[in-house]
Length: 429
Image (cartoon, rainbow, N blue to C red; front, top):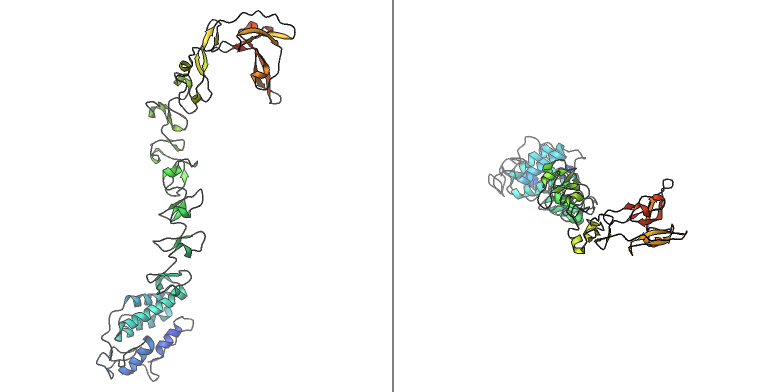
């Protein structure tokens, strides 16, 4: 048999030379080998073999030799190729195809290795070759290992006879993929929410093992980005159609209770701002005459609780919005929640004073002219109220004391008394 010398660039070069070194030097192609000669080749190539060769002898034996029967001195007939050698042949084909013929001849079906009587030696040789190839080439076809030392740097851990990327989080060195997936044994962005530290992507999507902005619509409540969790991007967005909302209503991009009053009923018959069913949307909806910014009627019993039939009452739930309790007719003035006749105007004031109605004492009194104020009635003194207007030139707010009045005649220069119909008290311009 002629020797074959494989190119040195093949990683199998040294291994194949060692295998072929066991062939007798005087062997020529077509010359039968005795069992003993074949056994020598088998021992060199595959490990301990039989002393005799025979039909199932070493690399080249084809006749029975001493120390054995027709099948050689140690082992029976050739068996079917094992899985380890099937993988080895596929590995050679993927990484060093120039050595495929030799691999098939030795470890393929009816290959020379199986003709010796110990199949385990062939299996072990195939596995050793596969492991060596995988460490050199990291080709997935060759993936096999006994320990982590057998594995390439790209798949550094051995688990169940295969090289994998990781077993534990500590083996994941890429900061963008700090977690080891227990299922795939590869490094991923996350396996739980604890791996997701970004406020905009706080959840781990278990289907992709990536951090996401949401997993369900519930995660988008109060997000400010919308009320729907997009199934593709796993980020919160506004709704597009009614079917995306559990309520069945998409109102201006937000899942809501309503778009119109027809979708509301009972104690909350009106559709308010933001698509929520509320008690009221304006004061006319409330018997008390006051609707809060939150869509509820307030001050329902404020007037009766205060015993007031005119003027105003207050309810803390109305957020300082006064509740109208009624009006006085015939020029009467509302004092303490009851209508009272106006006092007589008997003022006789000096040049530096004017006659004004003093609400606190319910009388007309001579008071100083044109006092100043800074947004407080107390600055003005009796008979005046602090009022303001915006300057058309500077835009500043100008404060001044306006004289109180009950009728037009109370105002200087025949001015108009601006009377509040609920209290009967006004102010001069």
